[in-house]
Amino acid sequence: MASLTINGKTFEVDADMDTPLLWAIRENVGLTGTKYGCGIAQCGACTVHIDGTAMRSCSVLLSDAVGKQITTIEGLATNGALHKVQQAWVANDVPQCGYCQSGMIMAVAALLKDNPKPTDKDIDDTITNICRCGTFQQVREAIHAAANV
Ligand code: FES
Ligand code: FES
Image (cartoon, rainbow, N blue to C red; front, side, top):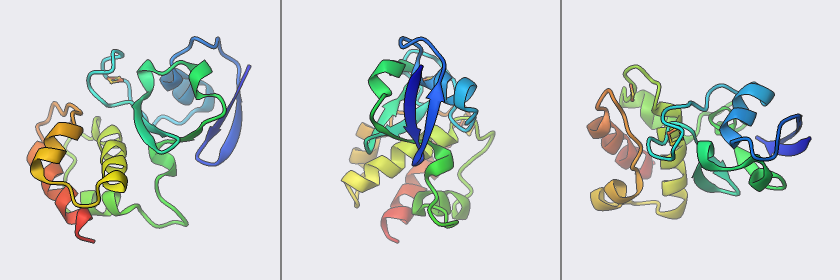
């Protein structure tokens, strides 16, 4: 049994300590906004924040998440207001199928916290999430829009 703090709430998770955090979030806690893509830390669909840092939850062990502050896409909005990255995503019509987008938004939110005005190179270096629909140009435009809020 592991105690996880996700989006400010505590959840008791009945799973082996070597379970990937992604599955604890999805299967045990029931927060399905965090997606499975590759399972090997390559695609970024599973990105969450752990103590404020963007991490690929498919490659984080449950044991390493205990005692940390975990934020998922469901916890990014505050007091009923969308995060500025979510607002920019809506305004710029970023998503197509949407599958990669929660991980993409979580990665971008962490980027802007650390680097409020990223250059295109900063974006290319940091946002390595894969989008099979090819929304990369819209993602870049929305990041700059969010940075200018
Ligand atoms: S599912 Fe975690 S990086 Fe692809
Ligand atoms: S919007 Fe479809 S995979 Fe990115």
